[in-house]
Image (cartoon, rainbow, N blue to C red):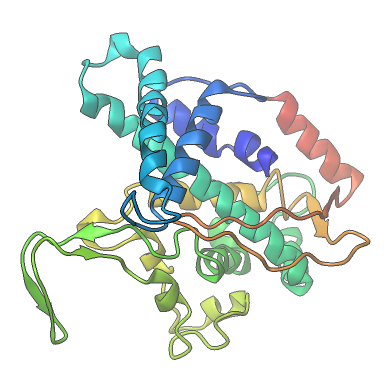
Length: 305
């Protein structure tokens, strides 16, 4: 799990875009700040209770988490402070880019790994397509995307099967409205049940099954877009997110170069945490090079930086 977080490019790519800084390959302090903030955010948004209510520790914790939130936004900003105006918005925008894009990508990669273990036939089909289209002398790149429709379907399946944010992002209604007979007063907080949308059996047959073939039919939607939100407030980083997950799934870490298999103890459970961001619970597996050629290709990319 930590390998995904530190080395999957999720943190490195977004930190270079947002701040123009490179992260350390191990024990990066910015990653540590982000993890602390995300942990507090995920816990704090899971439920809302008054601080005096028995067992309701979250509002008391909020007082402790506030310095973490401020620190995560301020520390990375201060590194490039001379290039920006000293205002909170300038600090918060790049921080939001990093905090919103790292763990969501990590969660998607965790789900992909679990899916490949629990559905080995999917892994074999995707690898066969890569071998047929790309060959074994190089790793896939973005120019191969259109020629790898089954791999694209796997990516869509990862987004739908176990959503990174099962309840999306809460929205505040600005103007009173009526939707399908329901009166929604201004000021209401709307929480979209994205999980329900992506697991509606009327839309997705066998919704709990990881089945990439569902995305290959002529009438299949282009992408499970609700996982990135709705309307004008749809996730602005969705294109980068798709590209980052695709490159990790197909290239260096996964399908093209490695076989992902269960350990001698058998396949792991399909178990996830609850909260604003859902993570696969830790499990053991084997990730081994598919061949000596695959191993040398991965080593070459590592040596190239």
